Length: 140
Picture 1 (cartoon, rainbow, N blue to C red):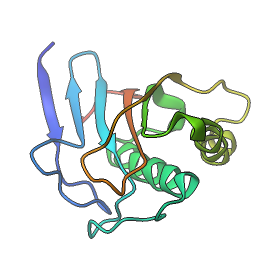
Picture 2: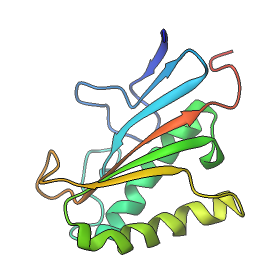
Picture 3: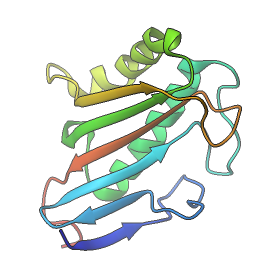
């Protein structure tokens, strides 16, 4: 699949450190890099609250979606990485607070959740990435 564009600096997000926030390929699909609970200045949001961190992760994904001209309904798959699987319900509850109003009766996107030993910073508790079926020819 040829890559058509790499989104490195979406509005409201800190620039990626050696990665793109999203990659657009043939077939009008975008792959959104893992988003963590950092704000546009790179500061942690949510402290040790996994639900607050999850909501910030999803807010960052939404910023990438906005830049791509997509919505939550266009998200085909979410990948979740948590450092403590006992917190999965808090992650799900936060996800539902964000996605249910946007999706209405549509089911949630496909999803994978795994527990990891650590993320790239010890204060990060959750990370989420996405595969997005773009709603039209991207960049047209």
